[in-house]
Image 1 (cartoon, rainbow over the protein chains, first blue to last red):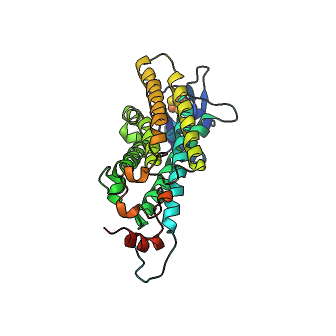
Image 2: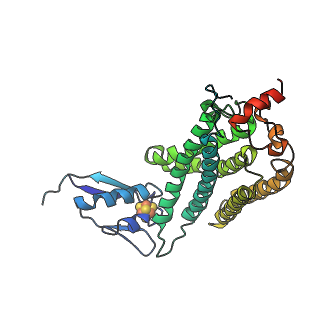
Image 3: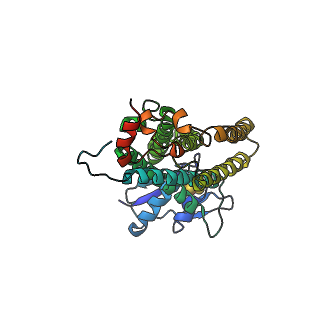
Length: 71
Length: 252
Ligand code: SF4
């Protein structure tokens, strides 16, 4: 099952660390809050995603296994 | 302690290692505090992004634990003064400079608590983690007092320079921390600044008559047999091969 990024918006404090570490799927809006790419994380980028999750200062970012959506 | 085989050995390697790892650990803790303040202040540039500072803060703290582990184990292994593993974790129970060694134990315990809650941050929860992280500001001054109170090199210029430089770095860091986000929680900020001033002032008053003064080794609670025969070297416990003569000159 692919992994997806989830953000707890109440916890997120716009530190922007996640976007620094995982720019492939995370961008920042003009206030520094992350904008997530909705695509599931390609397996070769999973390590980067994990690193971004571990770096988030407020533990707002999480990785979740999601069942593959029917097309 | 005389060598059972009658072979004399110089000051044990442990003795050198414990001193050097101790001073390196102080520097690492200082760096960790400074980086932590930069981190929480969200200081970053294009070339030095935040994750770099954050990563450096995490790594220096972990490295400090490693150095402290070596510092403790070698201090225990060094047979000249009797320090047990228990003295290194349980404060104020040892026989060698109990108070000052105990401060080291307190600082180490605090650091371990800081590191463990950080590693288990996901499980501990952000709020608890943040609350425990305030302990860092208690850990550092306690570690410095331990350095000054037990350190055998405090009177040498290089160690004094290191200690004062570390103090300066942390004072600047605390001031910076108090300013970042001013004026929310003003009381806490003023308390931090006041604490820093009191600590620095207290050190300035205590150092000249404490570790830099006369007979500190005796006054700090070094056991009599470890004090050695040469008063001029009161700070440095006598290397092993001298011990036999120490005992003969100082009947118990
Ligand atoms: S690192 Fe965490 S707090 Fe910062 S923007 Fe990303 S999710 Fe939000």
